[in-house]
Image 1: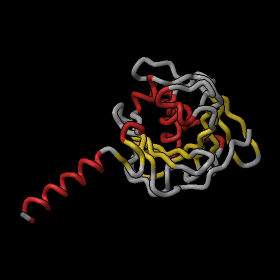
Image 2: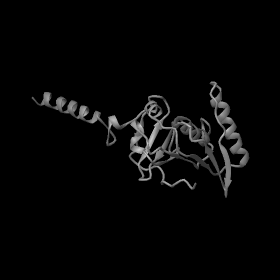
Image 3: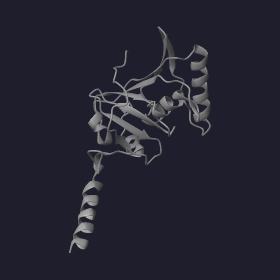
Image 4: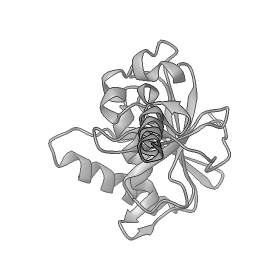
Length: 191
């Protein structure tokens, strides 16, 4: 009898756990495709760069535009402003979620083997009218970064003001997954 009960209990635990991802219902976990489909393209998008010279910032911006324009897309150049020792890239409100994520990741890495900049921080304002996958973030300013512990090179993380941290994998079906630990302290956009 015990030989039957143990496998049944294990199967029940697996099925019960399937609906949850680190404390969140699976239905609450979004994919990149869902976030793009449900996006309302309004809100401020800013990235702060430290530890980079003006020339390095310009080269990084040019490199991103060249790389992501190869598929025929038009990539608009952000406004670059220096404040104290930091450079700020300000994007037009229509910049999509995926491109913003790509910018943060690209500016963090100079190539696939090393980090170019340890302190890239982006802020992405979500519309207060957000629906669907964005509804839990409506009206919030999300803080984006690539964690120092990252080894995948193909994702980005963001935090909400309450300190909840998410990891976004870049593939279309890549999930937005809540993280168990805070990767960084949340700071508000200085602008």
